[in-house]
Image (cartoon, rainbow, N blue to C red; front, side, top):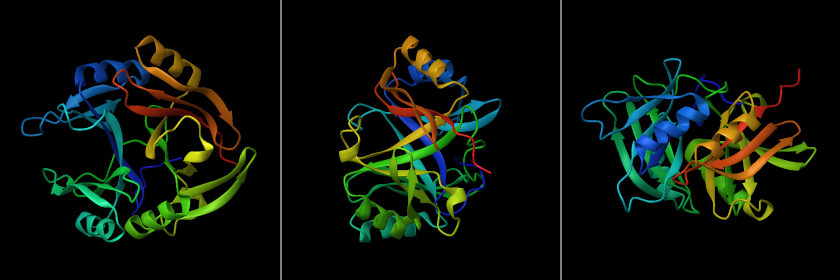
Length: 261
């Protein structure tokens, strides 16, 4: 589960690009209780999803031809330009070059060797989202990839991420955490595409914490979204469901299993 104690490699931000911003505001407001606050003049229509006055994600309307509707996960870095260069050297790509964001920090959007987009965030006045690991906020992220070893090496090079194998009742998971933080800071898994019938292409998938997964699934159906994978329990992780908003942006919800003492 994520927290807002961000370190290098922590998922620190997430946002959705959509062709229908008003529709996204209505949809995610109905599912999570989020409200939307525009970032103001000069922000290109970007804005913030908030819960009880705290920012939990971002959103922007994307023009036609700028790729499919999707969520992007941003990882903290002390140097966005260095992370972009490291991605290039590791045979990834720079999709959006590093750019300073109104004094709040510096962002870039990169792609790994398999073409999976992800962001990096170099903090300025904003460290990241205001809430994480609690209902209505980002709680977990997973990378679905065809080559676990290649992905692990790439993200270690670019972000310093560490992986280890852990046994769960449903099999062995490749868990991932920021460098030097240990198992207590695990924020997700690297998942082989070949083992997952729901995912057809490599991608990062954000999961948002909810108090009731089944209620969230019902809300998604009611509001015109898609239930890609029904609610199911994974011992040691929690109850999850994989979903998509009405425009097709994919995400998941989770009620995390209690941590063992």
